[in-house]
Amino acid sequence: MTPQARAFFAFRSPFSWMAIHRLRTLVPSVATAIEFIPYWEPDVLTSKALAQRGIEFHYTPMSKAKHLYILHDTKRLADRFELHMKWPVDVNSWWEVPHLGWLKACRLGLETPFYDAVVAARWEQGANICNPDVIRGIARSVGLDAEAIAGAVDDPDIREEGMICLARAYEDDIFGVPYFRLGKHRFWGLDRLDAFLEVLRPRIDACNEPATAEPLEGIPPTLRSTVGAFDTDTAGGCG
Image 1 (cartoon, rainbow, N blue to C red):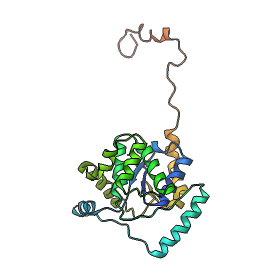
Image 2: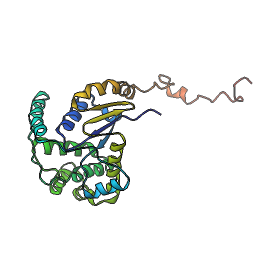
Image 3: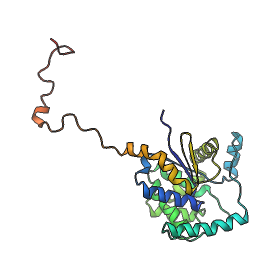
Image 4: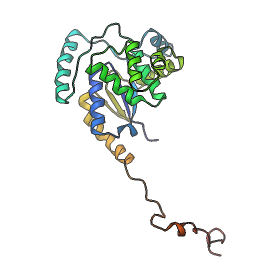
């Protein structure tokens, strides 16, 4: 069985935002060759569900020094990729709100516009995307049911799906985002995107290959309609 290419992303991470932006810029058809999986710091309810299944969370909080470095690094990278960035202030973050909302949007077939609106709100406007009211406004802006998206945190079925996403991250040894995987190949971080694309490119090219030509292409319709009409022999056609 051909392994599925996977990309773990998080709305919290500026590096995830930049990596997915660059990935989609370089390969517009990437959605046909890769599965996107959300990854976030779980709340008490999700943590309890994970613990009951013996699943841990590999992510650890960063130091103040690392956080300060990231503030400078992301500004430099945003300029490099010509992205307008406004660093948000996270207070009482509840990451289930945007990530479970995204899972709900997936079920409704609008995950891409919802994703784009969420990252724009967070990284271009500095909005608090963990606020259910903010998520309601984002949902409405892309034609989604605001209450259904913001209420995904109270939907047991979506909660279960979210827990499964984090369980898959645990099984894949994910400890940060962006994280890309294809079979035995693993790539962590924005600066590993090009290496990931090297192993992904053959699959993308295969997905973009033109369809095989129609066997009867070029034959007039009147003749096509008579195909098989004169061979009434037994199988094999030898009489």
